[in-house]
Amino acid sequence: LAALKVAAFDVVIQWVESGIRNITAFMGVFYPVYFLAVAVAKGSVTGVAFYNLVLFLIYAVEIIIGNVLLPMVRVYMIIRVLNFLGPEDMLGKLSEFLELIIRWTLKTALACVIGANLIQGMISPAIDTVKRSTVLKGAEAIPGVGNLLGGMTEVALGTALLVKNGIGMAGAVICIALCVIPLVQTAGTALLYKLAAAVIQPVSDERVTGCVEAVGEGCQILLQIVFTVGVLFLLTIAIVAAVTNA
Image 1 (cartoon, rainbow, N blue to C red):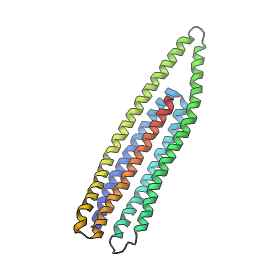
Image 2 (image 1 turned 90 degrees about the vertical axis):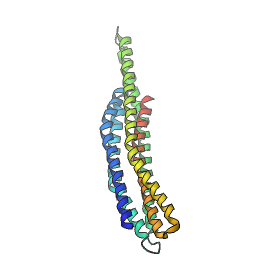
Image 3 (image 1 turned 120 degrees about the vertical axis):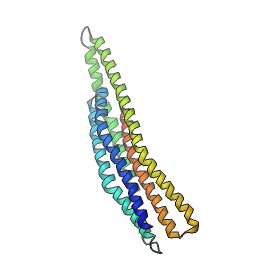
Image 4 (image 1 turned 90 degrees about the horizontal axis):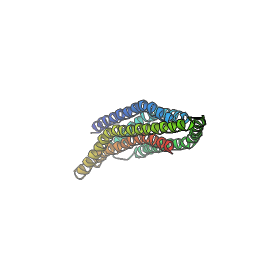
């Protein structure tokens, strides 16, 4: 039973790895287009600044999630299962410690990305506003056609802003769609194992019930990982859209 549970959990981890790989690959293609639109709409400072930040974000997500957290979740699940092979609770505290590290890492990554985005979002648009007003004033200062050029410049910038918002909305929708499949798969698996544990508890050994329930708890951690990855990218799109529309 323990071997079957570990093998089943490894399948769920493969689902999550595939989902995260798809999300990061899409964002690696989407962000150059999106931030090019941001650069045209509001000036190059905001576009370049956020583009560099998000490139680092994608790289960090791939490294931390793929090479650190998911292997740690595997170890966590093996320890949980091994703990139920004996009559005494000998590895319970170790599994709790690993779970604590995983959850704290996810929360820290989320807080760091939000903080970095907010700080950069407060600084870059101020520079872009100065640049934009300078361009408009320069166009309006041309004798004879200044007012016409100023009006055309405002229309062009407004159109670019609408295009940027459309691209951002499309990217957010696709990102959510890519997150749905691994989220539904992982959530459904977690629910089924929790249900199985509840059904067999009255008629089975406590260790058997705990082994089945442990897989459901591991799936809940994977669910949180996928959700955090999706939120990281969606927050970046939302913050960039907010500061560039201000």
